[in-house]
Length: 309
Image (tube, rainbow, N blue to C red):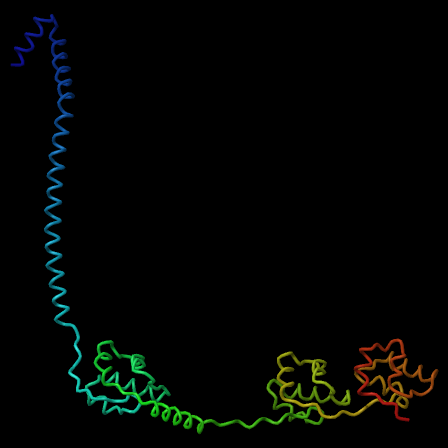
């Protein structure tokens, strides 16, 4: 067949053998290019139809299995659903009933125990719905019990009074700790205050004696080594008793004057010089006339100075 075609092409078009072969190959390729797309499209459509059909069948099969298994699971759960044991109920007050009575009616042990413990902890039932507070009390069980619940107001009040009375009996009121008189206390007494050890207690006593006693709790801030936390603790445990005037500005010499914590040497000398010029102090407020004695310094000094002749 191919030879006849080649001979016809050669005789008709006058092609050489090589040209004839090339022409036949070219024509074959053109035909393939024209035919293949149509064939491919038809094949694709066939596959799509087949695929869609398969998917529909698969979905129908899956739905039938799911429905069957779901029905079986539902039936299985229904057959195993917990049911309450038979109850032999009678009218009862949850504020008064005993544990044995609850158990004898068929109420589950954990619920019965929780009810009794709730009452022991001070709880009471003022309405039927209060029973739902009990741990383990299911809705089904409550519905079974609801019609048998009887709550008496007087019994609730009695329970509350008994519980209050029992609590009051157990209350022990601690006796107040006596405050420490800071100006007469010993170092050992001060050690009873939290945060005060042997070193700080001695330091407080020494500074107190130099001053002539504390006239204000705020003076504790002047004691070396006391932090704010300890000072607050001390303030809560002490009381200020009387102090004594320790400096006589008319008779004490410069050495005694300057030994007081609030009077340094320049102030002591100024007091002596003022007295030499103006004579003895008639009242202690005259000290404010000395230039280097500020109002704040005078306010600190005032409780400790005197003008006795």
